Length: 106
Length: 120
Image (cartoon, rainbow over the protein chains, first blue to last red):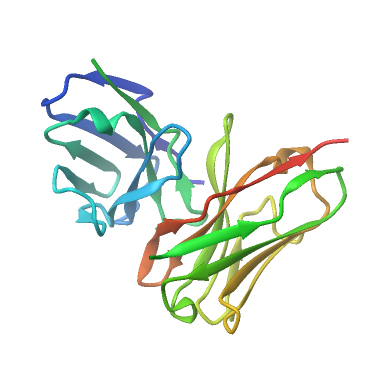
């Protein structure tokens, strides 16, 4: 299975820019997607196919990368962005998710 | 408004069966692939199964293939997951999701989740 590696946690201040990385153990083309899961809530799609903003998602969120290295950027970070962010690839079978990066605000 | 409302779940003994359903509304169900994704505190998010928009193609993760069956009724706009020979490692919250197939490779809508506990 394709392993997706994310850093476990980040702490930033509101108004700052934050980049959350996701590394794949093998190439996934551009088929990397990003989700936000606030505590006690459902996962929500933010970015699909590496860089496409999902419907209704603020333009503060953006995605980049291809192959094995991908980044989700939030700029500027707001208090409401406290959540765990997951990457997911759908290029290789089976679909796999990263373990998530917990974003906390100072 | 797009809604995915799942029902089912609960406590079940190892080796037994359980079936979920997920009622979809707010979009043209028959045009979309659908999937089940599960989540646990220890393993995180795991894709379980996907079905094509017309039900002609199904895909499973190795650990559930042969035990789980994903199906759909496009007249009723409902997705199903039949789970047989349940194991303790199947304990999870199961989400009904839209997507994961074809031109919609990401899971763009999620239902509220149903909790399954496999335990004697």
